[in-house]
Length: 416
Image (cartoon, rainbow, N blue to C red; front, top):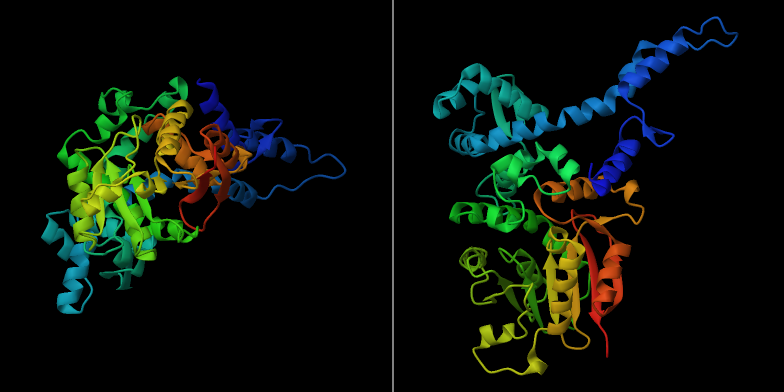
């Protein structure tokens, strides 16, 4: 097995399944054996009574984990068939709940299968019913699972279903070999990660849409973490739809902003900027962050000649570094440092692992595994980010954990 991957799994299972013993995970079979041994020792003066419920209680974490893929597939299927849009539209027209037979007839589905799916969605809190045969959507679905909602997560859900779930089926291959599972899942070259993700126009739209739906939930809180009022111009490097730049523009209207990404992504970026109401307020420019970072995004907005005194003094890296290995991150950060003026800032939005990685947080540990099957990268701790940033020449490094899905790492380009 790939050593770093194996260590990560050992740390996770030792803490989040039944428990660790001497550095080894106590399996359910071992637990049954231990209980049987205790039960057979009733001849001792202090016999231990083993209640049947103890096995149920001890195995509950395992069943919660095993149910994970069932819950995901229930959500995927409901979104894939347009269940929530259909129900909401019908309830809006009639003022009444929707029956499984109606949904089945409209979508050409099996009635029994449809009813079970809707029951499962109710159990997950995605649907509500006043009776066993009439359903409406829940508030969480209304906010995040309707295609018309500003906070819709459908893009990220479709990306998870179409790309992430097939990759995760081959986690063992990634743990064994230490590389992404593109070959096993899609017969694609694992080295060409973003060529795989951006394989065609539909794939690019799906991925950028997924990141946008995710970013709408996290970017406002990320921007709110740091006082950015001293900066005059920012460039959102690898910004995709521009959701981070949009959040910054809402919080700091005076801040001039530009999204820099690959040339074939920018038409999608410009579409999102327009539909989000920022047309003419946020510029775009092509960028390969392994080569250089544009110094003068203001020129794109002002259509004027600029000098170094007017260069961007703030760089955003939202969910970029976790895609890459340390040496690649070093290149990106050096290019950012070279582009910024003295006193310029860099804001990184990624999940922070605890410095003792085995202690969590669980969501970051799972995301680090997600990077293993999907990219060449990983989630990192504050110590690891600090090392990368200081080696690139940055100072005044801050790591700030938030109450949202992403954390913030902020640093400054100091004087020479």
